[in-house]
Image 1: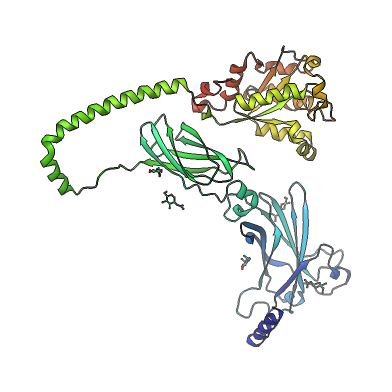
Image 2 (image 1 turned 90 degrees about the vertical axis):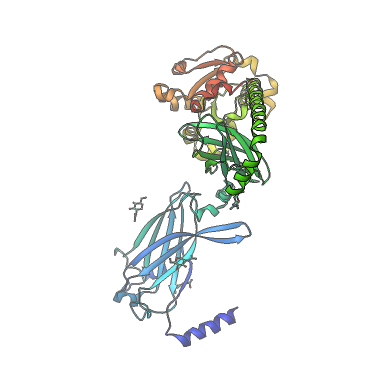
Length: 494
Ligand SMILES: *[C@@H]1O[C@H](CO)[C@@H](O)[C@H](O)[C@H]1NC(C)=O
Ligand SMILES: *[C@@H]1O[C@H](CO)[C@@H](O)[C@H](O)[C@H]1NC(C)=O
Ligand SMILES: *[C@@H]1O[C@H](CO)[C@@H](O)[C@H](O)[C@H]1NC(C)=O
Ligand SMILES: *[C@@H]1O[C@H](CO)[C@@H](O)[C@H](O)[C@H]1NC(C)=O
Ligand SMILES: *[C@@H]1O[C@H](CO)[C@@H](O)[C@H](O)[C@H]1NC(C)=O
């Protein structure tokens, strides 16, 4: 390998006068040149650019790096230039910082390349995170002397998200379905039905297909674990030709936030025999006398058939309302620490998940995240992510919480922080706003006993479980899905 390189170098030596190349290595501290006084120092770079590049590190694994390229200024100071130092700072949650120093292998003999054009170099390194702002600074070495303002050039680079053609290879994006090709085809079978075909992914087991033009015309959930081509017929309530099919996958790592895909509804091709017009005419001429009575019979059979089917469908629809119609909604549940977790919160969570198609966000399950983000940040983020915020009240603490609760892992006696007063104070301004109030609900098990200090909660809709269960579920789904027009079917089994 090194022999080959050597002979290659020898070849180049012979072919052209020596052109400087770069040798880069990390140098996070100050450059040694800082300590020495230089009479003459090079100017800054003429241009500095950053773009993401992907390199394959394993069969289905990629590493996404910055390709930092720079162009040297074509002036006399280039003769002093020994190296270029580039430092990258990311302004994400945890700031990271790193520098690379690229030595030029030869002194520059000319201001431009022998072949013409400015000297251009590039370095590939520094892993890129999604949607992150990076600050890339550069300066040439030897650096300016102490107490002098050294020339430098910097750029900001904001890395794109998973939709970018390069960033989609990031592991996190792949897990959110960035490389999944559903190849959606959809066609209007008739006024009431749209057929949607797509390829499922082994990343998840559930998909929601929505047909929408201005409003949602219909939707259906598909369950499929394997990679396969699947077909679903969706009942629609309006003109579907030209409407958009939106496919929302629910994959393991991204849940609701996976990358959604779109397609367009076209007319289904007619399945008919392709006779030439000539043939058609002859056939028609020969068979017309026989055909007419036959046609009448067929039409009659069809009409009766359609009538019976419609009636059957209507019966089917009224007796089995489709609970899979509504997408689940996210609910943040806040509860005072004295409430018994095992009895009350677990029961309530189970109820929300199994009877009201909800995904529940609980402080208890996100301890690590809260520790990382801090409780205020966590609550603010969860409030934004949630469709509803429920204040769970319990007034009969003692009888609800017996010994079994204390021994268990989810006991209220661990050193968990009581997020209830914090949540209340954070969300309190929303309770005074008519437009934001709809997000909040109060649920209690025995009596609505709103404690002093939390009186602002009395403006929220209040539900007594299990008595108001059906109304509660309906209200939970109402605001979000009015457009679907099917809200009353949401919670038939509450
Ligand atoms: C670049 O040059 C400096 C100073 O001569 C040296 O300390 C450093 O190791 C060199 N770096 C590389 C990657 O060759
Ligand atoms: C980095 O960018 C430079 C300039 O655009 C280009 O010549 C070079 O091929 C790129 N490197 C990689 C690894 O893509
Ligand atoms: C980069 O962003 C920082 C703040 O984030 C700003 O102060 C600076 O001026 C920006 N630099 C450039 C070159 O846009
Ligand atoms: C998408 O599906 C259609 C119809 O099944 C098929 O003809 C086409 O080759 C598929 N395209 C890709 C990229 O898989
Ligand atoms: C869906 O797949 C079925 C079965 O392969 C096929 O008959 C139908 O034409 C396809 N429909 C669309 C809209 O691609």
